[in-house]
Length: 257
Image (cartoon, rainbow, N blue to C red; front, top):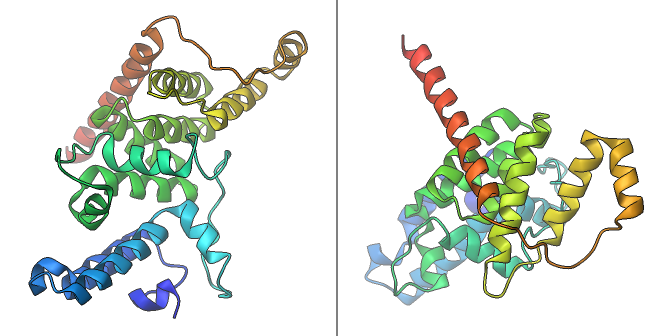
């Protein structure tokens, strides 16, 4: 049986269906409900692995390529590689830890086992699914909220920038890409974020093709780390994010009237 069959859902279902199926199955095997029985612990670990794969549109696309189901989901691929940061492990830690405020004694396995309690993590997964289903306006709204909750999370910055690019808001996207690079330069060890650099280069080409070509001729792209002069980029990104949130709140108030 494949992951979809194990959850009892269709291969072309949406994120909300996957989450609902996960919660339903979790009640059937969560170790806390069965006196921490070893067999239930193993069953729940497998369930978490399935949910982690299917709720992430990038991982889901890779998984779908391994099964022969004609109705499987074929989401739009993001512009960069499978990992935004320097490794898949860096992406996992960034998504689960930065902004989620895990307890000090937690382990990665514990975070995964308790991910159904992690609001920020779930919001990120939902936002990524919105992006991959081409609902860029809503994905931008979700990632704007996530950046507001966790301004130092690199993944949220990059996915917000990607959403803004699709909405042709190139200036705002550039600011968040640069904010992600600044945050990466301060990590220990520093993150090179080559995927982000490539996407930023492509953004420059879209905005001004001729100027981009001239700049590339005189300044070929370098693989070295960009050193940002100060915090102005993050501050400007935060101001744009605040304006977007204010506009979102105004629209919500108008709907309620």
